[in-house]
Image (cartoon, rainbow, N blue to C red; front, side):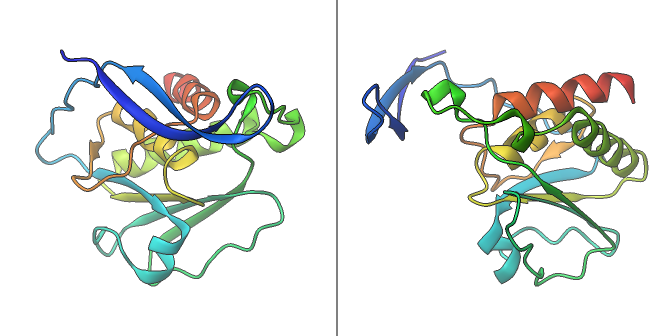
Length: 174
């Protein structure tokens, strides 16, 4: 596989936001499994405007925002809606994130149970966070491990590693 450079915004040693470059190996293509439900991660604004795949009448919505933020009213009528409040983890960028505002083991367990139930019931899932690239991408990536298909126009840029591994751990036990 070919190595690629990814340009993103991050905090440097002095605490300033700057454009940064990371060298990464591209991820292996995800093989679609016919008949399995899909998961798509999107932004908060995408939920408000209905810019996501149609999850069908039995669609599930998982909303993740920072504590204190108001959850948006979705443009689509989802059968089930779940709301979680926790922050992104910026410690890898040098910004300390307090433990009490990060994803908890209880929240990871609940998200894992929601994903497992949705998969068993063949329900498509839309998951959003603020930008649709970190927390929601982590949930979507974890869902692939139990058989979900990733939506074609999915935002899967920078999955939050803490969320990813905590939800993956809970999916092992569900």
